[in-house]
Length: 292
Image (cartoon, rainbow, N blue to C red; front, side, top):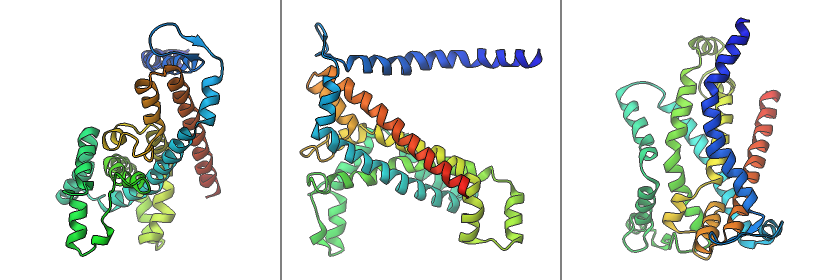
């Protein structure tokens, strides 16, 4: 009886959150997938066209280019942001004044608007007045100067530093919290066994925070696949769709071309791809933890 009452209490406590999530997340997803079967300009009557929008997505070269760019973002986030954040967490783990200041400095971009971050990096990359090309001139590397956001061959890679700078602070705080939850007895036992430095990190620290790393990978993948504001501010998907992402392409198709049905089909495809990538990453990381 006591267990039954506890379960009822838990259900009642979770019910408001579940209802809000269903109303503002689940229902719009289903509604968007539904409109993917229609040709609709946002006003007037929606015309049912079956799977034509989804077939067009499959054959759309710009969609596949946007997916390729998103995959570049995912790889840069998982293999760039997370290792960097983990290293910084280990280095800044101590709770002295200097390290608290450095942690706050690394986390600062997280509290800034993506529009502001985009504008800052636009000035950094500016071909005439940008600090990056100025530094290259100062160091005698003028041949390395480029049109960072205008060259279609490098523009997508030029967006990776601001993306990393924006979000590495979030994972830094997550990893520091995970490191603080490792019992001190485990560190003492590792020292007694002679595990120090890199050996301790690989054999003790990483296995203890592996669950947190798995969560961070999910956040990285989902965040990278829905990246929009930073890219839209800096390049709007250009030049010539070189920095087009799935989210920017969906936005442009929906609100610039007024193809709400096609935009809904793209957004549904983003959700399916996100679930596929996240499921694959969880399967791979779970296999790794079991093998370990």
